[in-house]
Amino acid sequence: MGDLLLSPDLEARIESLARRSRRSAAEVVADALVNGHSLDWQEDFLRRVGEGIEAADAGRFASEEELSRVRGKYGSRHS
Image (cartoon, rainbow, N blue to C red; front, side, top):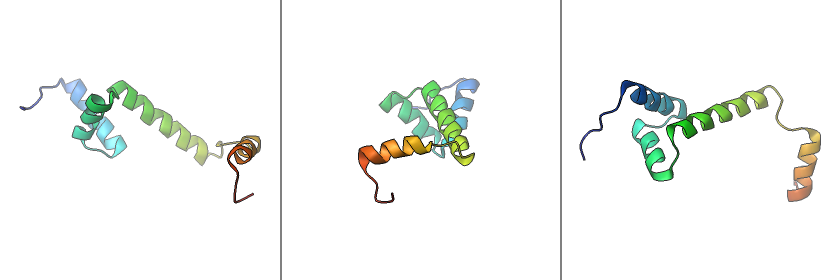
């Protein structure tokens, strides 16, 4: 298979996703082709993960009530 000719914009998006997700450009493209995770999907996923990490770092992770509900459902060795 020969090289793919991509628009500069598409190439930039792939390279950006690769950097942000610590994967190679080939892995980003393979994820899109093999798993159906479009570049839009991958960009949105990374955005949402980043938001979750920021919220957790700021202490906005889960309320005591939410933790209690999970402990009740799945049990906890660290009550």
